[in-house]
Length: 142
Image (cartoon, rainbow, N blue to C red; front, side, top):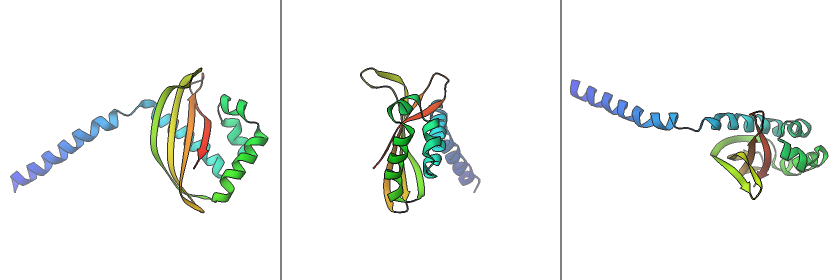
């Protein structure tokens, strides 16, 4: 019995040791980018186009007026209904989005279930701006 207990204990320690590098190896930018994305998505979930536009990144605000964003948000979100569930599927970091578009970018993909579309995906692009804050500069639903 003692041998079995030690064996089970050794397995638990081995499992913890294997899991630890994954937890400590996570990119430190990830939690900040995910928090910023989720906060911004809550505004869109409530249909608050004005506030989500205000809190978006400079590239987003330059590319789209508040009025255009209100129309686009209503067009894309209203037919899908309320968010039922949202889970982060992937986070990636890049230093370029194409020629001449350099910076510190995070690309986040969520698996999202809306009331009227259970198998949607949301993709957000965030940029870490000069003040160090992550802000949404792109949003796409499929």
